[in-house]
Length: 173
Image 1 (tube, rainbow, N blue to C red):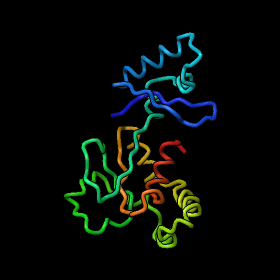
Image 2: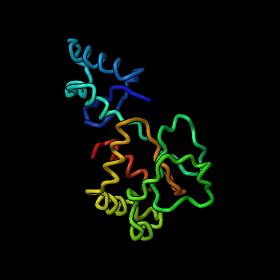
Image 3: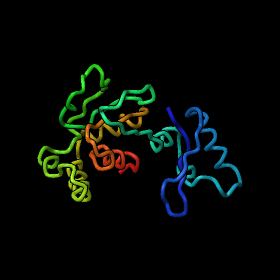
C-alpha cells in the first residue's frame, strides 16, 4: 500500500506525495514536521488530527482497462461498467467486485457514445447521477481501506466513467 504525505502548492492543487513505508511512520513524520520550526511543513499536516484522518486523504486509486493483465500491485480490482467487457473471461479478469450501480445509466452511456465532443457534458451529467449514489459511498469506503483499481472496458482511456470516478475519489468530492 502506498502511503505518504500529500501537500499543496501555493495554487492549492495537490502536488507532491512524500513516500513513507507505513502508516505508523507516516503519522510520526507528520507529527515531527508539525513540531519543527520549519516553515516548509506540508500544509496538509497542519490539519491532520489523527492517523485516521491522514489515511483518509491518501488514496491510491488506479485505472486499468479490462483487457490489460491483472497485476499484484492492482489492489482490489473493481469493475465500474454496467456491462461485462466483451471477450473477457471472468476467471482471467480477476475482478474482486463488480459495482454496476456506480456506472452511468444506460441512457447516459448511450447518449455519450464515447464522443470526445460530448465529454464535458457527460462529466456534468454523470456527476449529477452520482449524487446520493450508495455505490459511490461504498467505493469511497473501499478506497479508504487500501489500494483499488477501477476497471473499465472503454477504448478511450481519457474519456470514460472511471476517469470521473477517480477524480471524485482523489478530490474527496
